[in-house]
Structure formats: C-alpha cells, structure tokens
Image 1 (cartoon, one colour):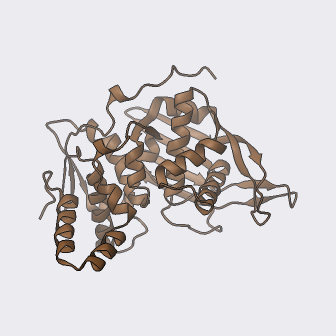
Image 2 (tube, rainbow, N blue to C red):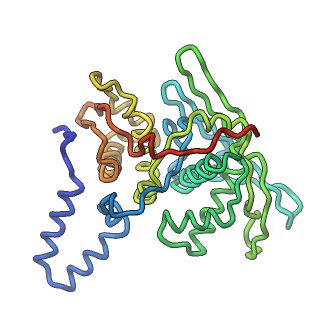
Image 3 (cartoon, helix red, strand yellow):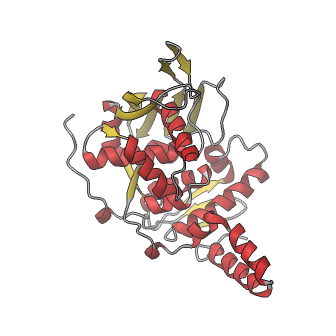
Length: 330
C-alpha cells in the first residue's frame, strides 16, 4: 500500500505509544519515556514550539549526492557518487603534524558530522559575505545547538571530521541543459591551527578556515537553504539528512501538474548503494523518510512498492526567510 501524502505516521505512532504508556505501571512508563530518546522527542516537537529561524545552507551538489555514511577506513582514499546530471568525487588528504615534522594521512569525511559542518560553514560564509570563517567558537556553539550539548568527546569528533574535510580534495560537477559547471578544489584551501592539549591527537584542529574561492563562488550561485532546527532533529541519521536536503532542493522544482516518479533502483543508487539487498535498503529508507516527513510536513509524496512519486511542494525554508549580504568581490 502506498504511503499517502495525507499519512502522518509519526504522529499516529506517538499517539499509540502514549496510549500504551497509560496502561503500564508508573515505573515502566517512565522507563519507556526515557527510551523514547532525544531523537523521537525532537522529531515530534512542533516546529512553532522551537526557535527555528536559524538557517543553514548546503551546496546543491551535496543535496543530490552524498558523502559516506560509515567510516570506509583510512585505506580508502577516494569516494565517488553520481546522480543523474550531478557528480561528486572526494579524495582523502594529508595534514602536517608538527609533533612528527611530517604529513599524516587523514581518512575520508563520513557520517552526519561533515554534512552538518558543511551546512554550518556554508551559512557562516554566506552570512558574512566572506570565504574566511572563524570556527573555534562558532563550531562549538553550532554543535551545542544541533546536538543539545557540547561535551568534549562530541566536540573532538566534530573537529576530527572538520580536519578530514579541510584537507580533502573535492570535485563537484553539474550539468544544466547544454551547460556544465565543475569545481576542482578543496572546499577549504587554507586554515590556521590551534594547539590540541591532548598530545595523543594526530593533528591540530583548524581554528580559522578559508573556503576555496571557486567553491565559495559556486556556493553563492547554488546554495540551498535548510532549517537548522530540522537538521538538529535529524542529526542522528546521515541518510535522513541526505533525504531532507534532497527533498528541499527538489520538491519545489517539480511542475505542479507533472509529478516526478523515481524508482526504487534509482533511490538505492543515490541513497544506499552499499546496502546490498534491496529489501534491507527499503527498510532503512522508509524509516528515514518517516523521520524526515515528521519535520518537513509540507512534503507531498507517495511511496509504494515501485518507488516514490514527488509532487510540487513548498520548501521548508521560503525565499522571504533568506536574507543574505551582497555577493563578496573576494
């Protein structure tokens, strides 16, 4: 049976859970509420109950392709994804370690954190109209807003992914009609470092970074606005973040009278080529999509055994919410 555009599975699931809790002893009910977790509580919190006017931005290519979901291992030095007219290639890089006076290999960026970091860096650069960004304080504040806490382990994990992202070589390509644009560069072309007190760390952490001028110029032309509160609610799942960004940049471009159909095979190629069995991918995709729709309730789509049908929908962030400075001449 199709997942109708009028279905609201997340709400009904929570209502069912609430009914069950009422019938349980108080102790068991309390435990059940606790296990509902920060993920479920954030997903079901109404949008108008949050301070959700914060915006983040993602490059349109990263909305249509993706970084690895899991750690591919330091021995994997290249990652490539192609989705129709857009393509992404990422090469792992090296960073100078003054403790050993040598360059060390860093792995590819992976998981939710580089996706969130990119959204943050893009937003800071666009707001300031400059490719140079102070990240030492802003990243910590961003992590606290997104994750709800700023513990040392969490900050170190974000900094590790920032280091991987800062040294990676990225190629972005997209074709529009007869025109193709491609950026061959690092997203970050330069960074200043602050000393890490823990001597066991392999590299120092960027405190100030500079986006490449090519990437910054492309970002100014191809930035997709995202709601930071939605990113926070979906920050537990790289697939959910990718689906949300994809629907944000895609649904409002669907012609109102001409829905777009995407097969399960195409969905798997874009969101789950490493999942192996199709039924395994479908299970994870359906779960992630339900979580995305709990936040992006304007999304109009039908999901059935053949694939997904996309209908014209208002984006989570409307044009009137996006106010940016004039484009930098840098």
